Length: 320
Image (cartoon, rainbow, N blue to C red):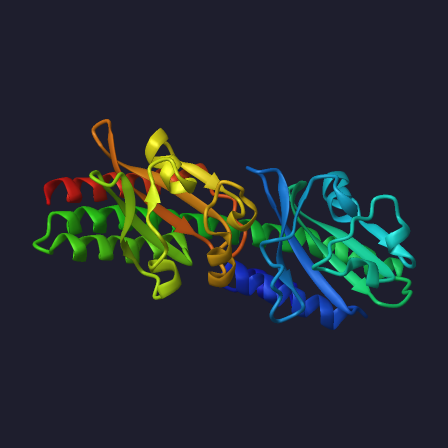
C-alpha cells in the first residue's frame, strides 16, 4: 500500500488523506493526525486528520520540542503512551483537539534522509498497548512516506510559483488593455484571490480630499464587507499600511487590537491578513488586502508577489 501511494502521482492533500486511511485500516485507533514541519517558521502544522471535516487543519501549530508531537519531531523517535497520556509531562492540551479525552497516544516521526518532515499521531480513547512490531513497522513506514511527502511539497511549491508568475504576467496584460479602470481592478482582485487562495481580496484607494480609504474592488460578494465604513489614513491596519508605506501581516484579525472590524471578520470567516501599499514612485495611493479563511503564516515570497501586483495596479490607477 505504501509503495503504491509513493509511486502514484498524487497531490499533497490526496497523499496525506491516503496515508491517514491506510494507517487507520492497519492499526486499532480512534483517530489519526498528521503534522508537517514548516522549516521556515520552525513549526509543526496539523495538515491531515481521520475526521473528514476537521476545522483545526492548518490552525493547530507546535514548535519543535513542544508537546508530545514536538518532542517526537525534535528527537526523531517514537513516543508510546499506552495509558493516561495526558499525565505525561510533555503532553500539551488543545481545546479544539480535545486531546485529554484520549487515554493512549502513539507519536511517530516522519523522516526523509534523516530530516524531519512531520509526525503522525495515533490516538485511542481507551487504554491501548501498541505491539512492538507494529511500532517498528510504522516507524519504517514513516521513513518511506517521508520522501513521498517531501516530493509532493516541492511539487506544490513549484506549481504555486508558476501560478504567481502567471499572475504577474496576466496583471501586466490587464493594465495595458482597453478595459475601464473599474474592470481592471476587478480582474486584478479576482486573479489575485485565486493565486493567493484568499477568502477575500480587496483594493482600497485613497480619497485625497476626505483622506479616507475606499473599497474600489473586491471579489467578495458579501455586502457586510463591501459596506464597511471607509477608513481614515492611519486608521486600522490598512490605514496604517498607507501611512507607513510598508506591508503589514496580521496572524488573526479577530484578536488584533488595531483591526477596526473584528465582528465583521468573524461573520465573514476571515482570519489572517496581509496588506500592502500601492505605490506610485514614493506616494501611496491605496492598499491591497488579502485575507485567508484559516490562520496562515505568509511567506516573504507571498508578500513580495502581492506587493508586485499592488505596484502594477497603482500604475493602472495612475494611467487612468
